[in-house]
Amino acid sequence: MEALTGPQDFVEQMVADYRRRRDRMLELVNAIPGVHAQTPQGAFYVFPNVKSYGLTSKEIAARLIDEAGVAVLAGTDFGSGGEGYIRLVYAVSMEVIEEGMEKIARWFRPIRP
Image (cartoon, rainbow, N blue to C red; front, top):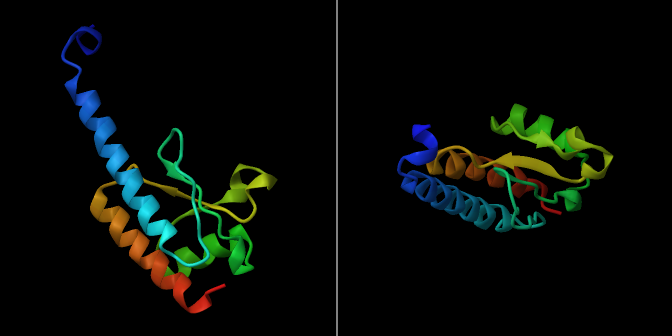
């Protein structure tokens, strides 16, 4: 009952925090040549298009964990229409987002489209 009737300002703060994380992740994703993501309308995920690299979503996801130490999901984990995409989560701290995105950007650099 307290959760419904008590102060709700924390909700506004949480929404603002997630918006900042989302916007930062989008900025970093879209700065990688050949990678592009739309602004998500819900959830805690960015779904960038990585088709220009000529690798499958599964290949990119496997190589990112093995070679860069960053776990992402292949778009095909969500159906065949997800080929050419990876899923990144921004329900983590800003520091984790920036560190992970730096590793991802560094991994993509030598294999530019």
